[in-house]
Image (cartoon, rainbow over all chains, first blue to last red; front, top):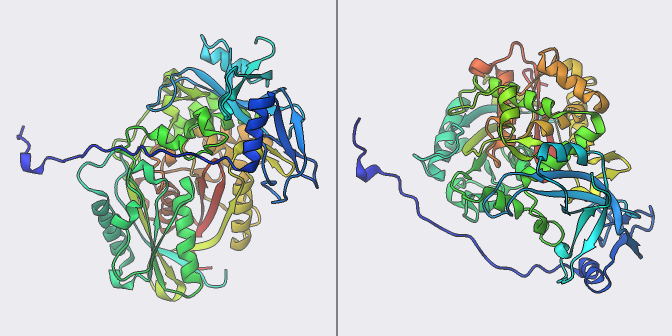
Length: 160
Length: 387
């Protein structure tokens, strides 16, 4: 086999792209998080013409562009609509396994994404098949809350 | 459509995990040269270049298109709609011709993700940093959650996903744009590790790089060239977050309203009343089996509730339309280019130039584009005959 010519060896240069930010939540999401942080409750916003309650709270209806009006308390119980069990390690993301899913809280018409904790994941295939039944879940608030979506997570109300 | 537009040339690099012999501008030049040769034109005929590049952070360079696509002396702009970038750029280029601004447009879609060492962390950064990014959602978990909804709503099974992945893997063996296409069967998919339940490792598209180029021309410029005519197009958008549209009154998340509306508009423009009886070839921009299955009913190939039965017939080769003869994005999914590749594959099919993957007598083909968390869809119907 021919020895590679060192002059034509491909060169790659190591780099990083880790800028820091402070993400401004906006008026509506700020209130959504402050309600969780201060009052331990999840609030949505109502679309006046249709009555739909949007959770997480939005300042306008995504479909009609109509401004939302009153704030409505929802949950803390709801239904796990769709989910996945992340089972592989991806660089830069949390260690597996864990469950995330969209939950429609009681009184809401849209679904919020969060972790679902406390599920037995020793057999992921079995856990996945059980979670397909759209189990009931409850929002559990952290003791220390900092005003972000991870101030709460979901747990199954009854074991599966 | 009032002023027909046609694809008169295509050019592609190979698609592979990582290109190690060429930098991005060099890859682009290779594909552009091939496209101009195919179109039988010189570069001075080009009236506009539209670049397609999705998230910059995949390449680690802001606006890699400035360094690799834009050319001196030619108008240039870039389009980014995530996975639909390539087809959105195609539609933008087409509108330049249709409005009379130029006769020839070059669409160049580039993916350079092979050197990203934390691709799924980059994909996490496309989600809302206020409400969703903290839950470590990525494109894989996003698609896995829609897969569970398809299974709940319509009765699809993990066997379906594995069988379809195997079918696409088999088809990809005929695709000469792929370097080292993977070959596996259903049992191997089911035996591969769980990535993000219900998705298994062999069902996921591989990381892929490459450049895809299409040359579009006005009717009067086409002349005697072998053309793929654009018979109809559609493009629709939806809300950013999946949870906001999980059960809209007009349709659920997995009814894929964006693609349904895009396809309906494209068929209407093409004068196609019953797509399941007219379309010969379909290229679906779906990097996972479940995402492909979600598109069948949106494309009018079956009723949503009959999706699993349609998939069963497709797996047995008993459908009129053949889906993803290239192997589709499950074989190679260079994110920024993948939706343009679907159009280019359809163009090769209707022009009869698809080599080993050529189907017999393709007169009508439809290509889809899908971007964001199904936020953006496009549909492009191509035909062998001048409209």
